[in-house]
Each structure stands twice: as structure tokens, then as C-alpha cells.
Image (cartoon, rainbow, N blue to C red; front, side):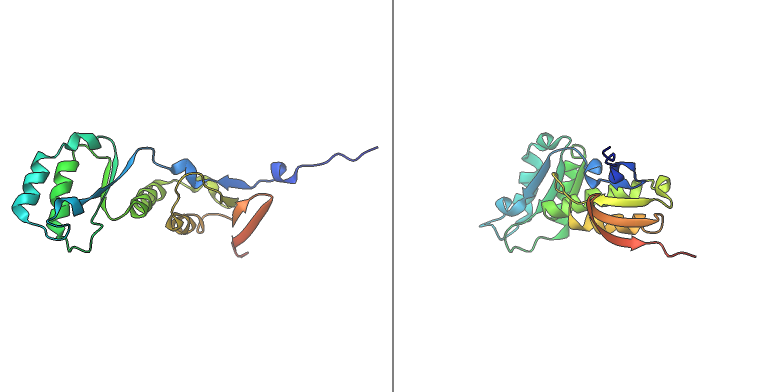
Length: 170
């Protein structure tokens, strides 16, 4: 008689944690101020203010915005702050930086809000393959959040995980 094949992964108490589940839905927009500068390098305050005043900000309704300057121009802080005052009524989030910085900020906020108390003293595997843009820093922030709580941490898939941490026995 053939012996029944047991699926040890399915029967384990291992909890899979997928950061993609915390991906904030919404369009990401990189807003480059370079096009509002004289020759892409010089910010003239009166012209900059005029462009900001006349720009259609409603097109950013419900979007995540990363304000940046792709040229080597030095942009004063007030310029990004001014743009934020126009964007604030429409955008879900506004940051200064690139799209990866935006993702890091969004994931940081999501991870800080997480309640991980249900993972107390449990073995957890952080899923590795992502179909959505999960920044590397999000994994580090997650470790910071989970390590004080869980029994053990692994990375990857249940069938081929990499051990990261095991709580010391008292």
C-alpha cells in the first residue's frame, strides 16, 4: 500500500506575510519642475508663481505626487512648498523626490500603522516575489516591526525560504 504524501508546508503553522497586500492603490505621478525653469536651470520667482497659479491642479485628484527637478538646478524649498499648497486639496500624498522615494514613504506609513499583535510568537515568512513595486527599504522597515514580536522570520517562499531570525530561548 502506498504511503500518503503529506504537504508539510500546508500543514505548518508558518504565516506568510506579503508586503504587496499593503500596496496603496492609486496613480503615481512624477512632477518635474525643470520645465518651469528658464532654460531648465533658473527659477524666476514671479514666472514660477504665475505658472503655479495658472496650472490645472485638478488633474492630480486622488494621485500620489513626487515633486522633483531632473536638471542640476538648485530649487529652493519654498518652490516645492508652493506647489504643495496647490496640490494639497487634490493629491493623496505629496513628497519631494523620485518615484522610489514616494513608494518608500507610502510603505513606511503603511508599516507604521500595521497591527502585528496577531503574529506574537509565530513563525513568519516574508514573501519575496513582488508584482508591485515594493521598495527594498520596506522590507527593512518590516523587519523592524516584526522582529520584536515573532518567533522566527524567513524570507522567500515556504518551499525554499531563507532563515533570517529566530527568537532566543529564555
